[in-house]
Length: 236
Image (cartoon, rainbow, N blue to C red; front, side, top):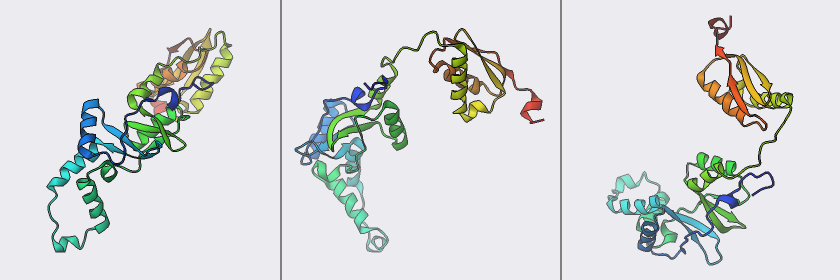
């Protein structure tokens, strides 16, 4: 855990990762995935350096390749031979090195949970290999990442001045364009944040509630806002 109690990949990752060497036969890899109930396995060399990863998609691609039809001479003139050769290797390969996805997505063990989540979302993947110095040290999946939501964090400060809380809420609102574009003011009394004025949408009310509750020292949130008058909505 970091000094700020923010979980990192090292805190959340699975350390005992099932791996295979580049010479592992494809049938053995398929059996391994089935027996272990996993959807991918890293391919590593003798010193633990990551060479790639074999996923269910790689194995299914190999199976589907059996139905590839021969390409006629004329059609072959318009197909990139390198791409065709690459597909042939992946659909006919006998070992992990032949069919694996080489550009495995990796992350540093020092990456925060938020950074890992952002990368998963951006790359649309369900797992990331955690590497240090090029060597595999763990694996972090979406299920592992969910534990970041229940890792104990530092207790909120107690007894903060109301004005300090109000300024913190206002500062948080400045960081969110949807929050600052409202006719809403903030009042704080004994740690309870009250939103006064007008709100344009129920979604904004929910957003403001969550935003305020994330500020240290906030004990509760009251929404006193009213629907935005037609005149204000039209800019009159």
